[in-house]
Image (cartoon, rainbow, N blue to C red; front, top):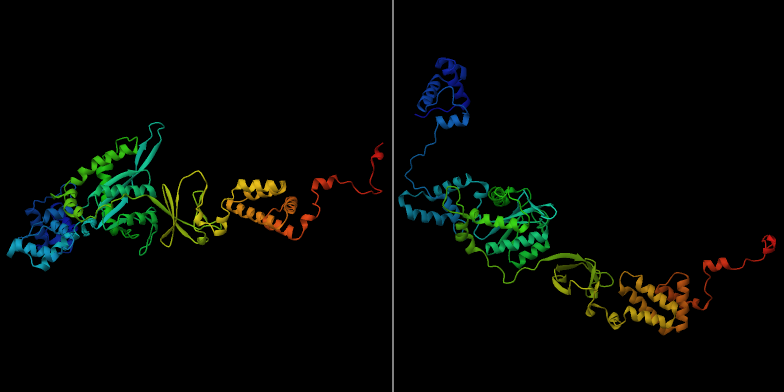
Length: 514
C-alpha cells in the first residue's frame, strides 16, 4: 500500500519527535497536524530504508527523499526506443518521427509502443536534455558562430608586451562538430579570414550561418530585419550560403554556440592556461592539436562522438566549396564631386561624369577599387600607384577629353609666353585648387580669352587681377569686358605712402629743422 506523501520537513520533524523527544505517535500526530496512522507509516518506512536518527551528516531534504523513496524502474512489456539515436536520425533530411516509429515497430513487433506513445516518450526525453540538445538541427543546415569570453595572452619576446588574442568558435548544428582558432581581434578582416579557414576545416558550406550580433557581422541589430555587414554578405554570396543572425535577447537562437564556447573554454583554454605563447601561430598550433580529441570524445553515456556524427550527418549534406578562393573586400559608399572623382583613403579615382552627385557603392580589395551603380560595375581602377589621381579618359566629358593633353607644365609655359602676370595667374590657378582638374578648367578659360582678346590686354588684365587680389577666371573676364585693363593700375599701399604730400601751411618743410 503506498504511503501518503507529506512534506520532507514534516517527515524530519516526525523522526525528531519520535527519537529525540520520545513522544508517542498520538502526540506527534497532534504536533505535526497529521493522522496517527501517517506517523506510524513514516516511522516504519524509515526503519525499512535504514534511515536512523540523528540523520547522517550532510543529509538535506533532497538526500532524505532519495533514501526514503528510491527511484525504481516500473516493469514494462514495451521495448524502449534509443531516444538519442531517434534524435540524431531526425536531423537527416526527409526523416520524420512517423518513419522512425515504423522502423521501430519492424524491429520490436508486439513489444513496440503505439505511435502516440512513441512520440510522447521521445518528447519527454528531449525536454530533459540541455537546451542546446533539445533543438533539432537538420544535417548541413547551420553553422553557429561566436567568440569565447576569455582571451589568451601572447607575449612579445623582444619587448615583453602582452597582447590578448580572441578565440573564434564555430559548431555545426546537427553533429556539434567544432572548430576553433585564435585571432588578434574581432574586427572585420579577422572575422572574414576565420570564416575562410572554418569552411576549409569543415570541407564544405552549410545552408545558413548563424552569428551573434557583433559589429563585424551585423551593422544594425534588429529582431526581424537585421542589416548584414556588406563584406560579410559578399562572403556569403561567394560561398553560396546565407546569414541569419541570432535574434537579440533570444538565447535559444544561439544555444548551440553557447554550448560550443563553453566546451572550448573547458576542454581547450583550461588546458592551455599554464602555457606561455610568444606568437599567434604557436597558440593556434596548440588549439589545433586539441581539436581532434575534443571532436573524437564520445558524448556522455554514448558511443557516438562529434566526429562520427559529422561523418554520418553533416559532411554528406554540406555544399561543396567554391572553385576559387574568396577575395577579401570592404564595401563603402561614395559620392563623386564635380570633378567626377571619388576619395578612397586619400586617393582619388574617376567615375563616369554622368554619375556626379549620386551615391555609389565602392568595393575595395587589396589590389583594386571597383565602383558599382545599381549593381553594375561602372569603374575599375588599380588600388595602388604613385599618382594621387587616377583618371580614365572615357570618364571625362567631351570638352575635357579635347584638352586632356594640356598638362600643368604646358599651361605654365603658355602663360610665361604671354607675360609674367599671366604666368603668375596660371600658377595660382594650378596651385590654389583642391584638384588639378579645377585649375586646368580655369586655365582653359584663360586660353579661350587669349583668342578673343590680344595678348597685351590679357597680360594687363592679369596684372590688374593680381593688384586687386582677385585672380579668378570670372574676375579676369569682367576686367576685359569692362575695359579696366586699359586703365592705370591702382597704387599699392607702399606706393601710396611714398607719394609726395600736397603743400600745406601746417606742413613743415626740411628747412624747419636747420
